[in-house]
Length: 153
Image 1 (cartoon, rainbow, N blue to C red):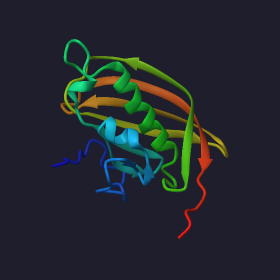
Image 2 (cartoon, helix red, strand yellow):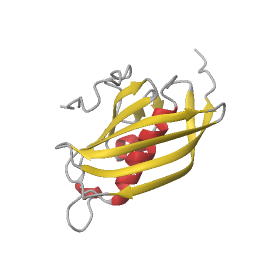
Image 3 (tube, rainbow, N blue to C red):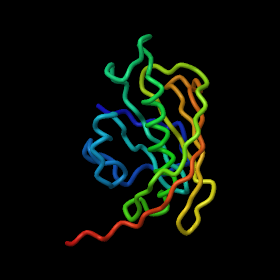
């Protein structure tokens, strides 16, 4: 059973709750299943994503690999950038800067905030914490907003 975190209760719950494992805040993303990413909250220029621990993504010490943490942050910052209309926009990452603070184990929770949204380029910052609240990593990034074509009904 998927547990919902209330790490950031000021972010609205996801309107996409219960979506398939290969969906991410309303958009198809097969990598969401591979990385065990679950969009928990989105809105008000913010997003919260949980990454379930998987042994296949652990480093030699059994902790979450830094590359997995980078993926979690990339996806969460991108979600914050499109949080104003999550189903209408995709994004392309322009740059992402990470700072690893401590090792992470178990499920990790990322929270991100869109600092500035322009017509095409947006900027976000975020952090990852372990379930016990330990700060694991920080990130900033810039993203290009890409309007999605409406699906044919």
